[in-house]
Length: 403
Image (cartoon, rainbow, N blue to C red):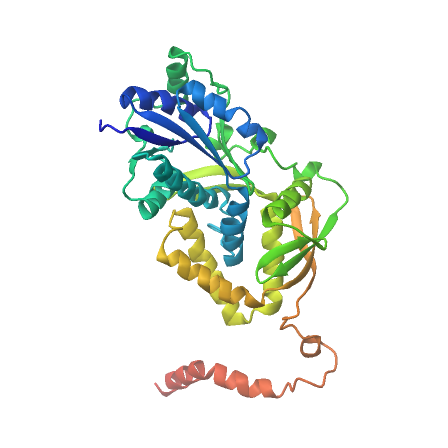
């Protein structure tokens, strides 16, 4: 294998990356391994002791980068503004975290003088594309090492045996059947009984939200302030995007809001099943769409939906650092200029519903919409509109009568 003096590893402290550190040292003799951890809000429990663990596995250094505020402000909020939902269900929690981690990794690799970046993504998944595509766009001079595409280990058991042979401690075990990924926006769970689409997820498949059946019998309401497509305040209290998301997560999770059991199309061609929990994000999305209902005219809303659909594939497919991303975000920002207002939402038994909404830019007029008597709408005008609107159909039908 090619020789590198320094390799920066995307490190999580999980089974895969714990094995990758000694594997890199054995296969790239004399190379220093720098572990890189991106803190995107996965939780203190996930990060506790992670530096010591990386060093004990053979790394010469462990960098823990606090990316939480940037993640929510510069990746989550812009994506919410576009309305992006992958395949109608997935709010892109894992997908959004990958570009910021890859960006921070590339910057750290350049600062540390590393010639290569290694990651623990498998050859079956989307993340390999997201990480490597981002590095290619930001630091193409840095080489990529993907052990899962090189080594001869093929299973969780192989990795456990590999670490045991080298007396490297790991908290993983053959009985931990789920694969989980967490950040401030969501938690994904895959594997175990979920690999059969006929199995209903057990409660062990959910780690954040309570089941709707066990949620409180009393609904909870909250108010969100929206300014140009960004949520700025909760119950009248202004908060940073990250802190607001954390608070919403806590309140919505108690009501079972944000659970999704999905079979999705991976970029590499196969389908996969996962249970995703996005409590606060689900509430945020409902609030933004509620204000859009008030302020966007029919063609603008249709265009926003097209932008959101395209952006969902862009994020999912790992194309954040592209000209198309800039173009779609520019369009979303332009549309969101009037998306401001107040929304009151009700959370109850797994559902969140906007029950009150107002905006200074609202196009809704009670005068025009009323079923009662009004002085602003002349209903006789509709006849001419309908005749012109249906003119092509009328001409086609008249032509058929001539035959």
